[in-house]
Image (cartoon, rainbow, N blue to C red):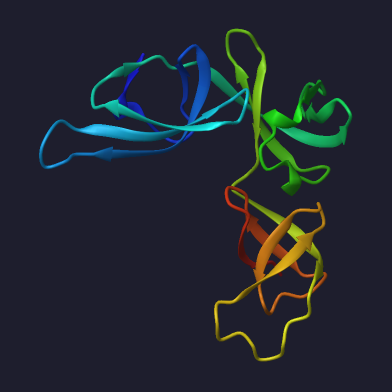
Length: 187
């Protein structure tokens, strides 16, 4: 059991009989009335995000999970196949359990959450940023870097993102996985 003071991003809760992970939370102390915590909870099985408000100090049931690094091997009709680099065991996850899968390329390391009691894989998490090569984008105009204007681009995994005007094809860039936003060019 944990209280609302223990909330942090990535904490897994047993909420309404299903496992949810906290993606965002905010403690609110209004001038009038008791304090409360606003949260965004993502259902691990379905991927659906719900907003929920907890009263401050309320006890919630947490689930014990373990994070293990796995390497992404390939995608087929059954789902996404990952391999544990220590035991060489392979885990296949359906597409619903792999958020931001279109930013993942073969050989990339991802963290897979396992339920501690049942050893069942729950979800795969990418690092906060990934480095990918732009395979297609419209050419930018020379000297047009003063504004913060963005243009569409396609990266090597097929994901569509928005990049600044000065980014060209075959440029390696860093992308934030949580919202598909451009971070910087990689040398």
